[in-house]
Image: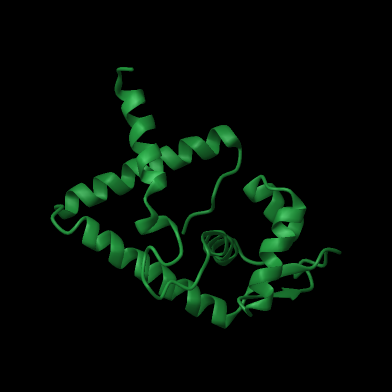
Length: 151
């Protein structure tokens, strides 16, 4: 197999296997969030309160999977159920202050890990890498028709 796209496939596969950044406890010894909770909380934080149906549409997951994930974050006090602020029938999940604190700590731990990985990179290389990742993700989201809101 030759070609740049094959190299991207291989490197993406390697990136996805690195537990250093992707699994609880791999990022930091005191990692608090499972990967699914980290992604769920990140989405709710950037988009605002979301119902199970909205989360299902956003992630392309069935409602039963999201019910399990949201139940775990609810039990942990990281989200709370609220009436739809827009008056709809479905209740929504909103991140709690505790959820914000845990998410911020987890994100900071990941950023610290990334800083160690890229310690010898010039700032312009890090910025270029971020721009390419954003472009790559935007194109995946365009094809999947599931854009992720960005700040």
